[in-house]
Structure formats: structure tokens, C-alpha cells
Image 1: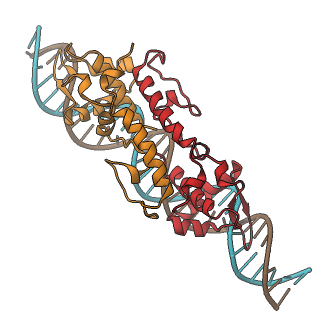
Image 2 (image 1 turned 90 degrees about the horizontal axis):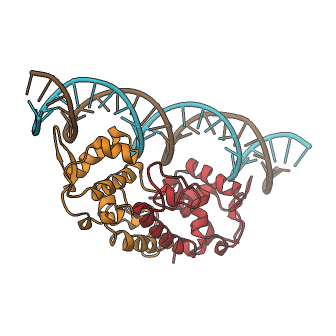
Length: 136
Length: 136
DNA sequence: AAATAAGTCTACTTAATCAATAGACTATTA
DNA sequence: TAATAGTCTATTGATTAAGTAGACTTATTT
């Protein structure tokens, strides 16, 4: 299961995707519509900004907005940015790899099974973009 | 990512699958070979016993063993037993479903995307069994 | 049959990570 | 310069992971 943080990030990005090109969107507006604790959302959006997915504007008329077209960012990229591994176990993760303490990956049955599921998952998440998060 | 608990459970089940039909296996033997904290493993095995996957024998010569052939239990079943949801978000989980606070599932783009990944993952995990966890 | 050794079972404690909250600070607009 | 809105730091609370202590059960040995 994705962490709450990652789930919130995807919800927020979906909301911003729908408003792409319409100027800055208030944190409070996203929080209200997507039912996300506002203070938690603040830190998530800030992190997405630091990762060059979002830009922000301070002061009146400010808010957050997507830098690029929603089609440019895949769900796999979005999930990884906010810290969520996609693989089910660390030893088959591309971006958060950790070697198992107890097994040889060449012969480990669990490793093989988890590799297959990771590939199946990635095949989907690397094809879909933020544009697909827009409701309709 | 699966919880540590779930990962340990799969490791242990793989070890017991390899020893199926050879009598009880010591907790300490599993812990040592699979590098699992022994007290944590105790609680996991106990839970698997209460879920009718394992049986145990106390006293000298005791230990844990699989009740049925490894081929009888799928990885999807095993993961769910020890408490791990397979879906990436609650609103597409079969066994740990929770309705989203903020969206209508009929139109939610995130829901659709996550449904697809869940199906792809389940297709694999429901086909593979504990027998596939045996190294080789 | 009693003593002992080998094992599981139960309850409790500590540590680490994740989620959420609070409030001061800075920049922008009007 | 007043009001608005993002930025940053620190703290609290909840959940998960790990470790500790000891009681209980079974099998073997003598």
C-alpha cells in the first residue's frame, strides 16, 4: 500500500492537473476539495516544488501550479518523487534497492515472483500520466 | 512496499515449503537461516498457525510445519493472512477496502489507474504458490 | 514417575517511523 | 502598510518493528 503521503500527493497532483494553465491554486482549496490535512499537504507540495514538478507564487493571488503539462509526468515518477517505492520488496526495487540479508537473488524464488509483479505494475504506472488523474 | 512482517512471513513460508513433509522445523532454525529477529518471527508463525496455514508441535523435537502442500497456498493468500493489503490504495482493495473521502469512484481517475495495477498484480500473485518460493 | 531439557506461547517494553498539528516567519499584492 | 498566502521549524501522537522476561507444554532420560 502506498503511504498516506504518497496518496495525498497523487490526489493533489490530479487536482492541479485539472487546473493546469489556469494560474496558481491555493493550498487550502486543494486541501478542502481533496480532504487532505492542510499542514500535511503543505509539506508535500513543498517537496514536489523542490523536485521541480510544481512552482509556487507567494502572496495574494498565489498558490501552486504544475510547471509542465500533466502529460509530461508519469504516475511512476510522481510516486517515486514523494518517497514511495513501487516494488513490494526492497530487493526488486529500482530506486530503493536493498540487498537481502539472507538470500542469493539468482536463486531466490521470492525475488523472481516479486520481480514479475514489479514489472507488471511498472508497465502500467509508466504509461499513465497525471492527465489520467483528472476525473471524468 | 510490503511490511517487514509480511516479508518475513513469506521468507519463513518459503523455508517451510522447502522442508514440507520432513517434520517440524525449529523457529530458531528459520530465524537463523532467513535472518529474521526470532521473537518477531514467533508472533508471525503463531499468527499463521491461527490462520490454519501452519501447525506446530511443542516440546523436544517440536517446531512448525505446513499443514498442506505448498502448492495449495497462493502468494496472494499468504500476503493477506498476515495483514498486508495488496492494492496500492484502499479504495481498490478487495480485502481491505475503504471508501475515499473525497471522490466518486465511478469518475475518479486515480481509482481507475490503481484498479488496473491491482489486477495486474493479483493475476501474478494468485497464480504463484508457496512452492515457487523454494530456491533453486 | 520424576527431573530435565527443548520447545512454544503470552504479556509487556522500547525504539523507530509515519502522520498530523502548531505557530512563527517571509514575500507579494493592493 | 495591511492583508494574503506560501515557507520553515519544532512538537505531538499513532502505528509498526523489535526486543525482553518468563510461563506453559511436551518429550526424553534415568
